[in-house]
Image (cartoon, rainbow, N blue to C red; front, side, top):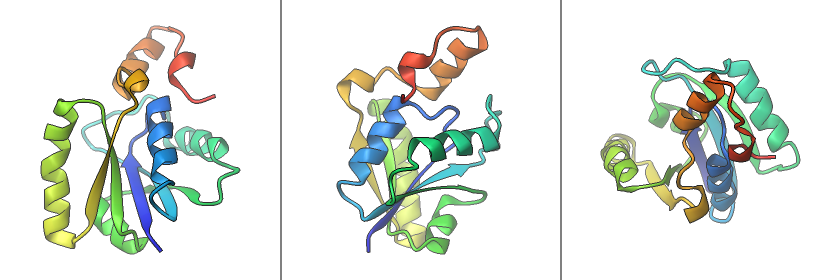
Length: 146
C-alpha cells in the first residue's frame, strides 16, 4: 500500500491544499494530512480548530486521515509507514525552498517527495495572504474549501 503524508501547518487549509490532497488520492492508496508544529510560525487558528475543520471537510473520504504531529516529518512518515511526502508548488520560489528539504529527507530516510504543481486558478492563494486578509476582517471565503 502506498501511503503519503501531506504535512503543513494549514493555517488555514485553503482550496489549494484541498486540490493537492484530492490529486494525491489519484496516485496514492491513502493520504494523511499531517498538521505539524512549526516553531517559526505563530498560528492564527488554534490547532484543535484546524484539526476539526479539516476532519469535517474530509469526513466522507475513507482514504484520508487527519492527524497532528511534532518533530521531523521524515520520522513521522516512518511512524505511519508512509512511503512518500506530498508537497504543492505554486511557483519556482516554492520549488527552490522545497527541493533541498526533499533531497535531505530522501538522503536521511529514503522517503521520496512528490510535487504537484498548483492548479493555475489557485496559484495566488497562500495561507499567509489568507491570514492577512482575515486579520483585518476581510472576506476569506473564496479562498477556503466549501
